[in-house]
Length: 225
Image (cartoon, rainbow, N blue to C red; front, side, top):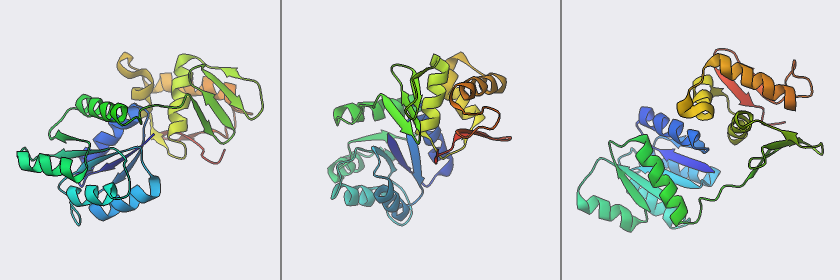
């Protein structure tokens, strides 16, 4: 699923993106109204998180334009508590609104509720990236027409997250947070997990073609594979 995060506050946008990636979303960002419309047309997102106060076009104008052509769920972010602004946003076509400041857990709960309400919350149990086909529920991965390869829960979670973000290098801390969550993990544990996963899916684990390492940053799944 793709989430389009639109906010001119880049620090907040990055925080929202980090939060949603932990929930399994692929995240795209825009930081002004015109860029938001371009990214919406390019990506056809599953849900949009839209700030009201932005340069060039405000959130109301962006929401109105999108709603004329698309029924994608839209959640407005606003520091305005006036009832008229909230009503205006909902009348413009927003599905929900969240008042700043908010907690990541609150935003995730709102996103999940809106997706359930609009019937867009179902996630496929099978993901594919090039020659890799991952069955999340069975915890099995296939390479082309080869036999299924069993994965541990951690390997399954790691590969799923890499496939969701194929073509992007993910910081090690972000991967650790997603894979281990509240249980906690560290870079050594992540290196060992990547090593075990490579041993299962790479034709030659010493020369990986699927999972790339970017020194001092993290790991990513090569999109062309």
